[in-house]
Length: 219
Image (cartoon, rainbow, N blue to C red; front, side, top):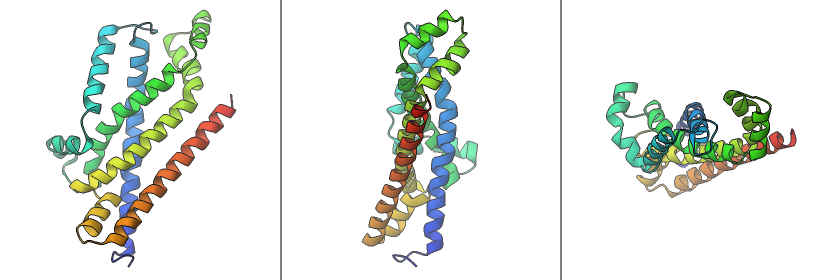
């Protein structure tokens, strides 16, 4: 027992948090990267300028991003029930967490791609590269360091969202803090969970910084 809670419960909460961060983050990258690419190439002056598509996607991402996560997770509960089969638990939280992080990552990855020197894109055009070749052989390698930092920022935001997911039965460290800490007036446990979350953030940020620097040094 630690702070009145079994060690098994604490480890379960930690693994639930890691589960709720890793899978939505992976899904968010898979969804967010193509969205970022579309935003970059269809904007005014882009490789495949299409202002109608750019404006529509831009507005959609802005709308989804403007919804607070606690409202998002509650509002799509019927859809979560339909897809996952339940509205509570760590697995049920994966869907709203993915809906939360995908547009957020799309914006971060878009910014990273837009940071690529225009001269590099002009060189790719001069070499006769196709749009896909320009993206994956020129823009992606140049923006990889910034993308890693963006994904790290997304992972930290996702960690905060998992804590909120705990408020509606999502499990994880957030649920541990609310159910066994706040509701039972267990102040030491509340402090311990805060320290644990801070430790997670430091690990994520440190890993992201390391990988980003390593990528930049390889150029």
